[in-house]
Image 1 (tube, one colour):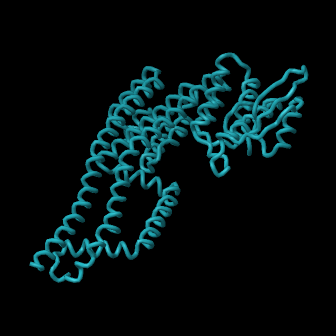
Image 2 (spheres, one colour; image 1 turned 180 degrees about the horizontal axis):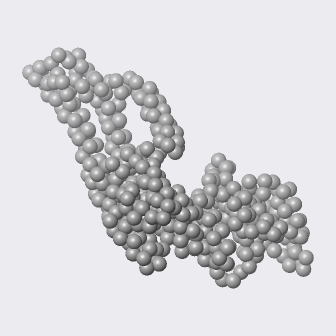
Image 3 (cartoon, rainbow, N blue to C red; image 1 turned 90 degrees about the horizontal axis):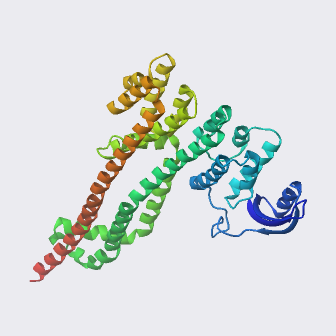
Length: 400
């Protein structure tokens, strides 16, 4: 799929400019002709949507947030749905989005609903997004439902970005430390290999460091290959949903990371549930969709049991408390929301509390991670240096 910029004349002779996504220039020209436009110029875009290798870059969540935010803004401003979708099909978005809006525009002209047209488009949207759209259509609040869905997607993207940003500095620190250790083992330590001829007189630490350096120098190719293979296997293993779920469950057992993960997932679950209920999605359907943001198998199983209890007539707060799915504050807020009829507002309050608590946990985690990483890398380098110094001093003692 490529992006093409065009200039074309409409039936009134007005010159129009825009962009559209198509497989080839011929297909782009055919699409413009179907719109009743006479092509004046049609140029393929070699710009920002392509990587240096010429491939179209991956569609990101932020791309979808921007595109659907523009669509929601137009609908809230009173622009007709068909006109707004057609406008998005001519804007400078990712080719997959342009192709998707073009398909939706064609489906709307054929009389299909927006939700059905969106469901038929191959876009990696969260499960709750389409449900919000359908609920908004049924209630006559499509623009507001679309805006709420975009806000939730933006929140999900923001949480992921904060986590990535928080882990950037510690990751760079650990990689730099590991690089320094590798450099010392492969280039510095082997310079003292001649002292191994007197290994009977060397202290154990000096002997171990010198032998380790010689081994790393001799088998550096195999070591690098093993590290790369382990990294590839790790990435593939993490791509497996079951392995990833077990990893998240293991993280929740750790002292500081565990509560951080729990509060982060609780905030996301409460926010999605509040958004769905606020857009008149039935409670049971909303509970099922909100679980899509819960990655821990154990917590998801607890929420499943809570949904069964709610289906049997148990109040939501009591069902969640029986399964120990939330904290005491969460049960109280949900119970108050059920009794007062303000459950979405109480869920938003719960999400805000958990979000703030999660940020505090994140700071605590980083406050512990950075000095631990520095001490660990510094300790390894210190052991290497002590081993070298012991080898040198032992050799000097023998010479004397």
